[in-house]
View (cartoon, rainbow, N blue to C red):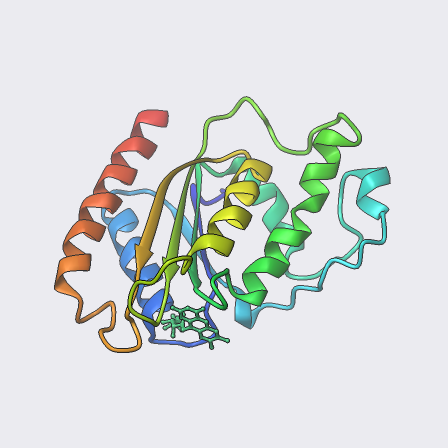
Length: 197
Ligand SMILES: Cc1cc2nc3c(=O)[nH]c(=O)nc-3n(C[C@H](O)[C@H](O)[C@H](O)COP(=O)(O)O)c2cc1C
């Protein structure tokens, strides 16, 4: 059985903000009998895309690393949730590595015209960006651009774009105001996912 929701934790730090957010989402999904799988990508062996052109010819990636099983899961899932620290107003490098590797899906669709992902299936995406600094202009700008493209690549409608700032002073766990709206967002997301059935 494939998990219904893929959760990608883009931080290396355990027990910190992104990780704790991933746990909270996992718990809520579980309470609603929605299966999920958390990918702690810093624990995974995921090669950088080397632009070798293999996927342009075949529609899949030549690397048989920890990313390999994820391709089919992207297809079978009803939703993808990415939680990333803000690094230089963008996603973390490891999240970007995963994003780049979905070029294989992109190539299958737009170069080979033989999509490896069911393009008619409805999937709902959520992107949570976690910044350490207090809010400032452009804090999420790089990540927003990249992730908008990523969710299109994995055929998810990005309905939830959530931002948490100032985590270097106030952690997710301590931020009661954010946690309240976050819980509401997760409940909305769960409702949306159930409506896909
Ligand atoms: C390399 C690096 C770059 C960062 N760049 C930014 C940034 O541009 N803007 C920001 O608000 N926080 C930035 N931060 C802070 C992290 O976003 C913040 O500590 C976040 O909570 C990390 O997620 P985690 O707590 O789940 O590990 C940066 C941290 C690192 C290590």
